[in-house]
View (cartoon, rainbow, N blue to C red):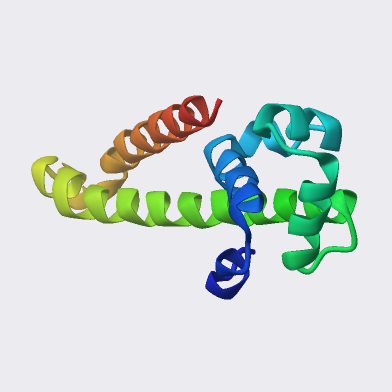
Amino acid sequence: MFTHEEIQSLNDLEMSVYNYIIKNKQKVSYMKIRELADEAHVSTTTILCMCKKFGCEGYSEFKLKFKQYLKQEREQKEDVDFSLLAKMSDCNISYYLPNRKVDGIYQITSQVPVICVIEMLALKLYRQKET
């Protein structure tokens, strides 16, 4: 959402708003323009100027795009976390769990519950970290 060129075009006051937004992503996505102005110690005009530099008509459009940006960021992080979890489970757990034979046939499903438990725990930890 924020390109290098757009960030470089910000003046000092707009940069202070940008820094506040980055440090308080979740909070800002629900703030009104006046609340953000008060928290960042700037005027609403400064915020509107910053929004325009990010290609938005106004603060409402900025918030909408910012929420979409946060959603994409979360989804990308989840994808990375779960692909890493899958690699960990493939590399670590499956090699340490013994294969079971039932009627002469290997039963690899004995590993699935362990992987599911780890995945559920990882998801809960991830969601707790977000809040």
